[in-house]
Length: 250
Ligand code: PGA
Image 1: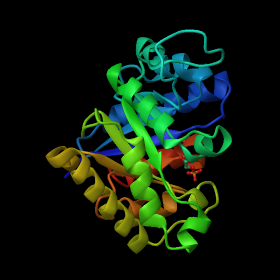
Image 2 (image 1 turned 60 degrees about the vertical axis):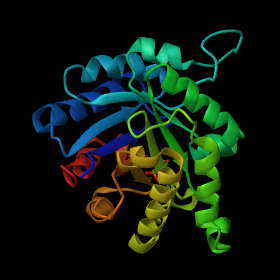
Image 3 (image 1 turned 180 degrees about the vertical axis):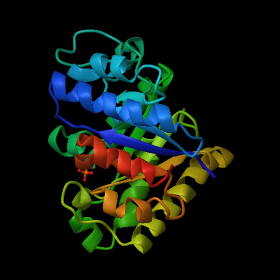
Image 4 (image 1 turned 30 degrees about the vertical axis):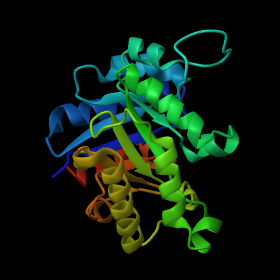
């Protein structure tokens, strides 16, 4: 069985004091509950990365950012490179989240270039894909996920340097989740696309589900075939909830 990854996406939330104490609580829990069954990852905003890295040191909890630039350095005001994240001590970076696809008009091609840059620096790329409600209603879910997967996942991706998060856009922050059968169908399809892309490596690839994961539905979602963890937004901002989600897979 693949090791699960329980990842928290803090989005644009958290000031120094709260962020630090949230990270410390997660770190304290995981340092006492480290397991081969699941690892834990927190992805705070850039401003908190350094503090959070200090707070989780030695606990086994990994730290990731929520975006990076395609280039190493240069005249890109306001941007942060994968090299800078690696230099700081990050292990992961979330790329292609639907909020970046929507608000920053990020294309599959840009996400692919960012993922390639991240992987080349030794970061693990958590690449997000998922359909909108209109696309689901039109029966296009699998096609949309296939296109996003094929175009957003770079050729350098393998089962160890890449994680895929399936996040139906309509399930993010809404309290709505797909049925277990729907999640199972999409994750099985993504596994198939991964086999086509990376052959036997696809077996190691962690496929996370994301979108309104909370303590009350985590156990069920995390027991679906081909669901190897969760990308948690809102519920990752409360230590008790995030820990409860992790416990359901530990
Ligand atoms: P949510 O967000 O858990 O608040 O729905 C998930 C995500 O956007 O990664």
